[in-house]
Length: 422
Image 1 (cartoon, rainbow, N blue to C red):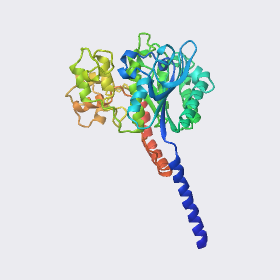
Image 2: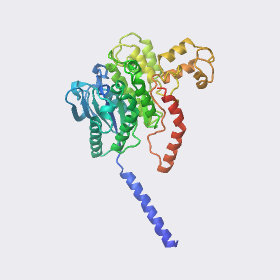
Image 3: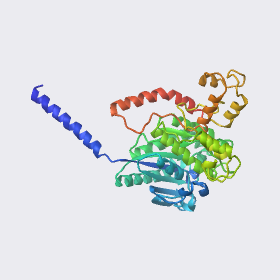
Image 4: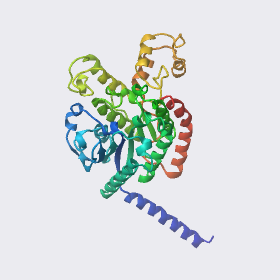
């Protein structure tokens, strides 16, 4: 190659590099789109009196698109985030989800919901079914709106659905396949193959009633193990109504907080909701009293300090450390009352003592049941998050792809081991 040819090649390479930097400079700024979908527990029957007082009004800083159908005609529209937009003024997790998420990011936040009562994944939401088509249409319209506003939309998807399929003997065995197809279709539709997909388990209190519940939960766990962008929130920290189908009104408030915690942790693994000893002290010191807010222990806003406030504090304690299942001392697949009972009844004992799960020895080499075990339980109460390698930035293509591949391969076995127990 002659010197003039080398010079021409270098000039072309420089022009190419310059073009890349110009393209990056011209790239639209990011906006997050929090999309909630599912059946009746996505429609929601949130208790407005439990919302923080200033969250009960329309909030123009978060544009909201919705398709919500109970058993009549659907309510549809686009406007400021507002619990009163849907039919019957019902709302689900989206209010506390969007408002909490927005407090922790600098980018604009949009919210959306596609929900319909009594709809199963197999009969309504899998590709080719009516709600799947509506969902894709609604998300496409929001994507176009965000782009028209001058932003690059980054969707985070929240799936609150299980009951209809858990009660259907034909549908439950198909849940995993249908869930994989749903997620793939949604991701392809918006052109975001790494879109976070966050869902809830089928509540364990309904497993005896809904024969397919364990199958659905296993399908959700298997799906979660497929990708570091998939997450599974343990619904058992929420309270069911007497029908053992729908969550109690206050649980829609809590669900929004939990969903926001997962999404923010995905963007930044160092994120913590800053719930710790101060908040726990407020609950314990005011137990059984009336309350008006977190400062005096009333974290769920129902006017009294009771078990719901304690559950919420413990569930969000320090959010999560790096090990998914730490704190599950009885190996039930969740971090809950049974684990706390084990700690209290075995406090100070050697972990080799009869009746103490051997997993304690593996997780805690100090060999004594003490504050270390209690800290792990508090940090992981409710068992919701899986570890993720995702951050707020995008790595360079070649190095980034290699890093993600290595991290994913390194974590795959541990994720499957612990998540399948959920």
